[in-house]
Length: 257
Image 1 (cartoon, rainbow, N blue to C red):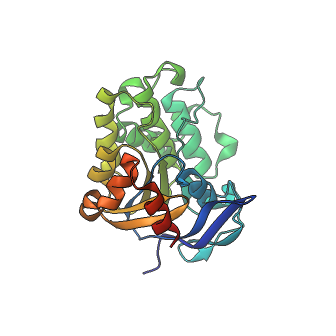
Image 2 (image 1 turned 90 degrees about the vertical axis):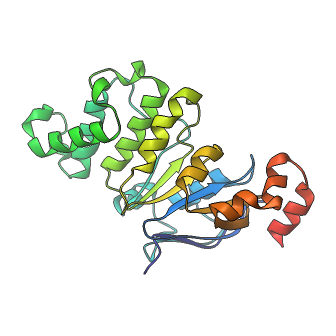
């Protein structure tokens, strides 16, 4: 079966610095795959290469076998790759209901009807109601986004991404900035994402990583340092050393070797 998302020897240089160094990564169909690494490991650069924000120096990005290396961000979204961000990207003046209606309507290709009252299109209303329920937003659906608790804003961003009907979903630190007490709701909601959506989670919160992911890739200094299932990565002494800040020189050598 063709991989959902794949990189082949992906490189991004900024002057003499290789922020992404020969990264080959495979996201299987239906994957629950986490990308982790210490600060400065190159995770954001890699995600920007996957989504078309940055153009690689060399290498390829494949979406379900199709070479999308030179496609724009919007072209990748149209082909089924959708991303959330470390900092929420929402319209503060809208409500969760209107935000989702906008996304659903645009996905259906009916942009000329975006500003009609939601009730005029029963299919859009039904899909919005489903998303509001799935992402635990029904009780705040008519509140301005600006007034929502940050955890609810995170849930709305993921709901909006899912409204785009992705085949590959990149979740970029979905619990960043969310108070500890509000994270469980996000953990549970992410855990219940549709099985046919292949998910790449970029995250620092190890509780979320180890509860969600089946496969974990560790980046160090822009290169793949380790990859495996949750048990092997969580027990790997080299990975533990990297996260403790110990053995960095050895880790860097292994990553580039």
